[in-house]
Amino acid sequence: MNTGSDEPGEVAVAADEARTDRRTTGQDAGPEAGDGLGSRAPEFVKARRVLHLSWQVGVFVVGLAVVVAGIVMLPLPGPGWVVIFGGMAIWATEFVWAQLVLRWTKRKVTEAAQRALDPKVRRRNITLTAIGLVIVAVLVGIYLWKFGLVMPWKIKDQ
Image (cartoon, rainbow, N blue to C red; front, side, top):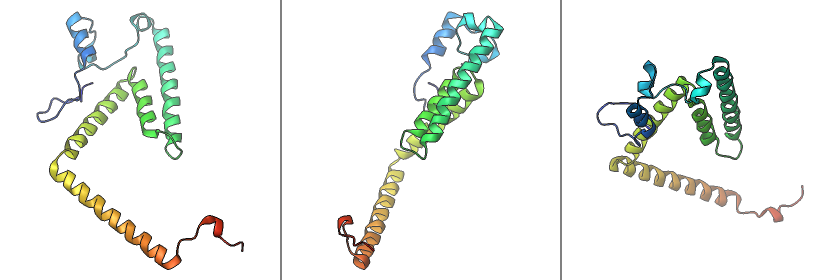
């Protein structure tokens, strides 16, 4: 898993061992193979155009079903974003655009994780959380002072 950037100062999450293995065994073919981009279909599928096209359609349909399920899970209970990125990972096995989106996302998540570990940012986040909790506690106190605490089983029928 590579962040997709060779800029100094960026941290890679993990080395892409599969890409390294292909380079050393000489299995790369085509200009995009050096970037680790392209189809990961088996060789016998890639060798036959109709089979490869139907493979891509199948991968697209399965990925689309997973992404749609993730979108449905956003307002409903469930791990919506995880499922959406899982669908993107399915698409990334066949489509370069999905691989590029996942690389960009991994790079941004890595950058956010590095920023979150910065002591100044952590102090700021803790301070903002404490202020937010104080505001919520004050609002709950005002509500209870004004309306009181009424248990649902003691609500009178109107």
